[in-house]
Each structure stands twice: as C-alpha cells, then as structure tokens.
Length: 320
Image (cartoon, rainbow, N blue to C red):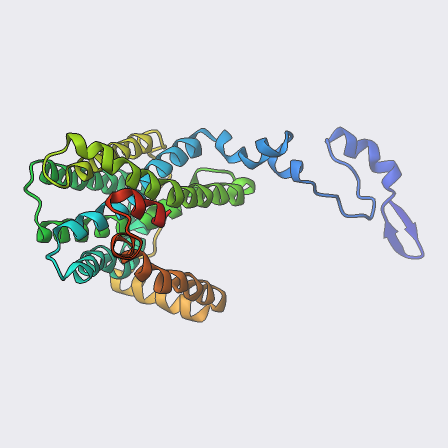
C-alpha cells in the first residue's frame, strides 16, 4: 500500500505474487472476456449444445420427457381418429369438438391447481404418479378398442381424465429442470427440453398415422389399428415412469409459504397481472392454441372429406 497525497492506493505489482499464490489474477482495469466455452466447458459446438446431457439426472429426465411427449402427441392423433370413427354420421364435427373439449378443459382449469400442488409435494413423486395414471388410462383405452367395447362416451370420459392428468403433470415437469442442472447450464437444459418437445410434435403425429393402417390388419373391429398404436403409447408412458425412478428422491420439494390453496391461487394471478413481462408472455402463448388448435381438431374431416385422404396416414401427416 502506498500513501500519496493523503490517499491510499494499492501497489498491484507488489501484490501480484499473493494473487498468483491464491490462484487469482489482479485486476487490470479491463473486464474479462467471456467466451462460450467458459460457460459450458471446452469442446466442439455439438458437445456444447448437448452439454446439459452430461448431467446424468437430466439425461434420464430428458429421455423420459421425450417418451412422455411422444405418447401424448401420438394420442392427440389417435383420439381424434377414434372420435371420428365413433361419432354418429352427420355429427362427426360435433363429436370431434366435444371429445377435444373434454381433453382440453382440464388443461385450462386444472393446470393452475397443478402448479400449486407442484410447489407443495415432491415433484419426482408427482411425476411418477401422474405418468403411471396416464399409462393405466392408455391401457384401458387399448383394452376397450381391441375387445370392440369402445363407445363414444367412454372415449369422452377417458379423454377428460387424460387431460386432467396432463394438467397435473406439466407444472411439475417444467419446475423440475432447475433442480437437475447447475445454474450455468439452465438455459441450455431448457432449450434442449423445448427442442425435444417440438420434435415430438412433428415425429409423433406422422408416426401414429402411418402405423394405424398396417397394424389394423391384426386388430379387432374397425378401429383395431388404433388399439395397437394406443398400446405403443402405453409402453412409452411406462418408459417415462421408469426414467423418473432414476431421479434423486430428495431436494425435489419446494419450500412453500403457510397459505392455503385459494390464497396461493389468488396470489399467482395477482403476480401475473402485476408483472407485465409475465402477462405478455402468457397472452402470447395463448395466441397459437386459440387460433391454430381449432383447425387441428377438424383435420380428420379435412383429410377425408376435403383432400380425400382415407385412414390415419393422411391425418397424421397433416398434423405433422
């Protein structure tokens, strides 16, 4: 330390050995240059892109997440085809819309409650329970189709419960990612998760539609092919459940404040309204489902009556 004109200054040249001994460098007056490999480690571009998968727990989560969304996206196609087959003649459009409403309504009204539940219970346990329930519903649907016992109203009830389960599953699934990766890999992990989800939206509908026709040869009744593809979705849900058992059982439960569900729900809505960025993101996220989803619901009718595409292949490709 050097005193000059009554002020104290540090002699960095004298302190440099101490900094080196401590594994640090003295400041030079210039900010450090941050490069991409400083954040994600050395390696080529592909290694940095997939860096989050180096975390073993996130890799298990990512695999299960992909299997879950493959099954869910395939069931969107299968449910629409099944509703189209079971709805009375002349009421095909109404039948499609009603079954879709049964599946979508819980996603609107149950999802906020699902977020509150995810804040208060072990997220790993919640995922295992909800995905197991999804697999059971899928197996029950498979049984009803292959035994030729499926009725339209059975499909409506099963679709409602499937939508309810998805609404409870999704908040816990989204909130789990920050608990599985270090902070500096969080953006990479979220990007990989969203990329995998969007990829299933392309691959799963086409795969479901393509498999329906050949598997229908060994099916029972007119919808036999749908039953065998439903069985495939049950297997994918089971794979997702198995992957969740590889996640750590501890540290998955958030510390929630002492408040009841109603207070938490009201507090969540108040926070969204009081935070313009969150509110705008929420409204923007509602635009595409509001305008695009009704078109997707009617695609079986467009495929067969407008484009002349019979069977599930044409509809699956349109969905993709």
